[in-house]
Amino acid sequence: MNGVSVVGVGMIPFGKYPEVNIVDLGWPAVKAALKDAGIDGKRIEAVYSGTSRGGAMTGQRIMGRLGLAGLPIVNVENACSSSSSAMAQAVLAVGSGAYDVVLVIGVEKLSKYGGGTLPMDEDDWEIGLGLTMPALYAMRASRYIHDYGLTLEQLAGVSVKNRKNGALNPDAQMKKPVTIEEVLASRMVSEPFTLLQCCPTGDGAAAIVLASDKVAKQIRQDAVRVRASHLTSGRFMTGFRDMTSPEITVRGAKETFEEAGLGPEDIDVAEVHDAFSIAELLYYEAFGFCPRGEAPHMLTSGATSLGGRIPVNPSGGLLAKGHPVGATGAAQIVEIVRQLRGEAGARQVEGARVGLTHATGGGISGFDHGACSIHIFQR
Image (cartoon, rainbow, N blue to C red; front, side):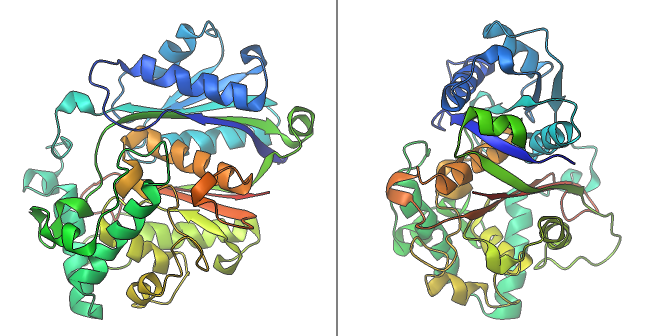
């Protein structure tokens, strides 16, 4: 495999744009990424577009609006991992030598649903019995509380940290800091989760320009190298599932670190899939940032805050930046690239050289999750 680097990134601020169609969400992010790379759109040789609920041929519609149709365009649907899965396919294409310069798009418009939990496939028997994503994560939180003594204040602390980070991010959907008291006083959604412990849905788009290492050096001197790109799916399990250990991420993390030749101790900054407050704590442990049962202490010690040993979700994460499902993975990559280039402004992680992104998703009966995509980048 040839080396692959990120040479351009762009995104639009996440939020709710009820009057804007998905194409008009997507093309400004593409233009921003091309401008960041300093290249003409005609240098793009292929496009990988990720969206979960954007409809057919989203990539073609976006590129057509820019006058760049006629390219090989692949549309990827993989739930919350859609655009990070598109990224994995793009890395494979460039790494294999098939292309020198490709574009990755992540785009989603969820405001069309009018709020509330996203509709799920009722053919799935767990969904048919009433399981929603807030309920699933609430069961995980309840089990962790039972097994490890997690307090409600510690759980709320995840939202406090990430909303504080989001207040420093001009692209975040939620920019108002909150206190533990405000988090706990917000309305109950699924015990023990209150509203401020659940990620907001919305609309958004992000884009990434990838190039082979040889070409990347011609485009910019501060290109960010892709050290590992890993995509996996959940294993079907009948019977008992350990709700406090996300099998797909534990396995995916191990395989990604092996691919990169790195370990958890080498990561300077991470963007993980904090769809609900408990999720971030579970992922501290899944990635080996701390032992099982010690995630609450890791949080309260400040290790994962800005200025700590390994800041997690400096963008604000899904809890503050927002979660327009198909755009999330690409937006995580935009954040990490900016961090490694030293362009994150007030939320900059000083001295960051190695960063990780993690997007997992897809609630399916019998699976921990349907898909998980993890990337490691190095400057």
